Length: 382
Image (cartoon, rainbow, N blue to C red):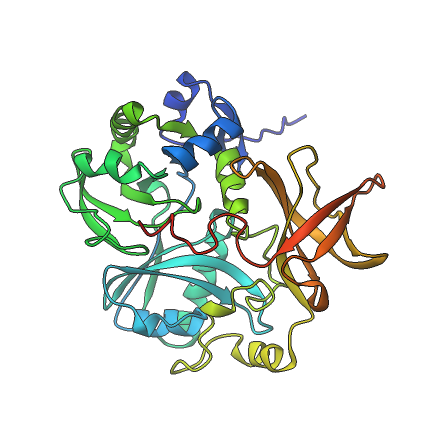
């Protein structure tokens, strides 16, 4: 009988992470570090000093050609035509029904050259989606999945700039590289790295993309530079817990092809009046004009003693108003946090709700429409 194997790939940092005590788990076919010491410790380091994250499976997709802007502007709900080189843009790609195929970041390198960072599990879908659209629309635009040829490291936290600036030959100060800006330069001796002022933590942070063959060296140099500042290696556990304190939705849990940007609280990314329209515009206009029937909210529990699970019911009084889509411990706030879609009339800031588990256990929570942590984003923009 033929034996069935389920091989997993290693990121270039695998052996360094193992030597640091990383606990590994499968992440879309990769052995990925979940934690090194504890998720709480790595979460708090990210908030207080810095965390060094390996998200090697985050792939860059390049879109080049005379019609690159036209292709992306029709595929993305945000307005690509208003972008300037050196700026990044957060957006959704929607289907004709207004459902989210993915949420991603778009970087404008030049007028005919863009880079995308889709959700890792959606890369192949986005590449196929854009390639087919370029073909059927007869556009001079070429979509390339750079795959594992590029490495990626992320330094997130209030000390991130102090750690990285001495390793860079370009200015990454707030005035030179503002939030959602990016530049190219030498990092840790590696030329032509892309340094982006983005991240999933809600802190000052930088994401660095560079040639994959230098990954081992860059990881070690950045780690050594961060050690005097108290930077910790951080895993996926911390990345997911810091994101929920910021009410950042996670594709596959809080977002999917049946949820719209308007329902998910991402209406600010939808540019209804941009030239040429976009895929899903008619459906989203209808939803905008008629009003959404549900809304994604965060729900904050009193402490860390209970963590809701996906699918737990959300009730107001004895009325079911929705269900939990994701949850995690907000270690910095000292409170567990859940996210979920609730009926529009229950999406009221400060409203009391009850979260009901499948075992019948009930816990109280408070709805918040903004991020539980730093809703005005002052921590990100320093």
